[in-house]
Figure 1 (cartoon, helix red, strand yellow):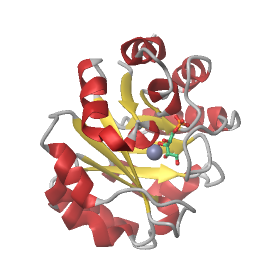
Figure 2 (cartoon, rainbow, N blue to C red):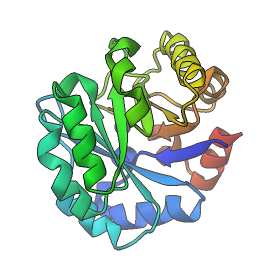
Figure 3 (tube, rainbow, N blue to C red):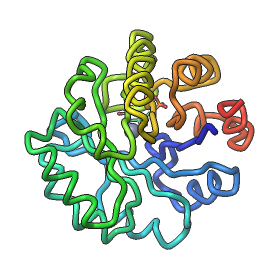
Length: 214
Ligand code: DX5
Ligand code: ZN
């Protein structure tokens, strides 16, 4: 089953609560929250205090995507704020095993994100320990960028790695996902689709979510 995780990066931040209620009622399974630190990526967004505030208005899964250096420093505060899935970038984590354990000790699911240029071999040794792999389909930092088609092959390879090892791991894709690219990533093996501009840029949020799911 395909799950949709709308990225609030493209929402109107002046009425974030309302914007989250909109996707909640429209049937999205998750809320994708992009956390950026201005170091790992050249942009700044939000942190734990905003997540904690939003936690009060929805019971939907908080799918938190940390594009930050030193992600280990945020495990405890993000768990307390109400994060369900803690996704960090493999490019930021030399002690990947330690941070995975730490996330689990704090009762969150573990996601690992890979930039388009980062090979799958970087997660070979820890694949058995995680719940989700996020394959970036743009270079992280901004919403509204163009899908990078070469990632399709990588999605297929990851799907095959997971199948060969008989694991139960979600494949999430993020960046440039819309009506045109959604069928391509799903055919390649992705099962959680993140979309920002395709959902919040549309005048009918419920329909845009259904279009992606179909
Ligand atoms: C980009 C973020 C994405 C972004 C996707 O760095 O990780 O979640 O919001 O936006 P769209 O769907 O517009 O490409
Ligand atoms: Zn994201």
